[in-house]
Image 1 (cartoon, rainbow, N blue to C red):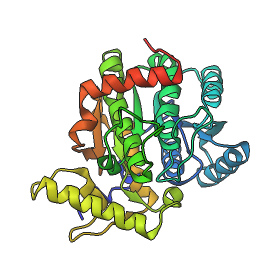
Image 2 (cartoon, rainbow, N blue to C red):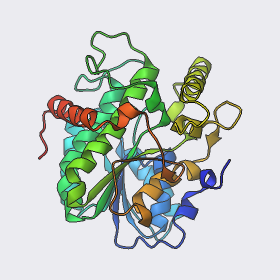
Image 3 (tube, rainbow, N blue to C red):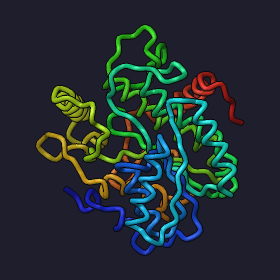
Image 4 (spheres, helix red, strand yellow):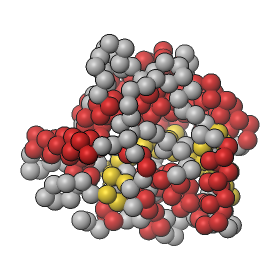
Length: 323
């Protein structure tokens, strides 16, 4: 394991003062999002997290304040599976915050049984991509006010399990595969970053997608033993296909010799934090990052034509157009 792979949030933020920075993190009440909020708050940023309920938000703020007594933490309720909730949250954030310096789209679900969002989208595509697509679009004015600003989208090496199912992204007629549906949603996160950068990079809003690694959180609570075997087999197949000089980021999820390697949240959140604050990333975007470094994603996940196509599809699905 390399030195880079073991970097923690504390190491990434060593010597960095974020006083005066306003950072919004979706899904900040547990796991990677919670650690991201703690670390950035400890570095001086004003951090607003989202949580699915007031109870979860209040509990998270109490725990964050206990860990960082001088920190500036607050929360907003957000259910990404409801476009009404996304719109209400965005309106509140526009009222409450003077600007947003960094928006980290961290919340998400993984390999869940088939279900639909409140608006009828396949649950993983609707939550992981479309909810964030609408939220980010509605908060673009706040990000422009802070320009140069950054958007960080949590993707995954799991994007290698599926391109966008262009004919049926919401599984209206296709047979549902929870692993492929998850992969589609993570591919969408990368394509979203690519198109955000093309559209808004010249205005000072830079976007990147992040692979955090296989992190020991409750995100995989729906995984069975067969699911772990499936993802390991898919990762091994991708490595074999790419060959011995593989730069495929699926390798980041496993040690040499095969198998999946779990990391703690302070390591898993490090790349999100690095994407949010690293001076060496200033003025750049449309990137896929892993292990606090620029990484290679599947070609279909970085195709600019696919990114533009997904943007148009997403606008159609959420019923909102962004200039």
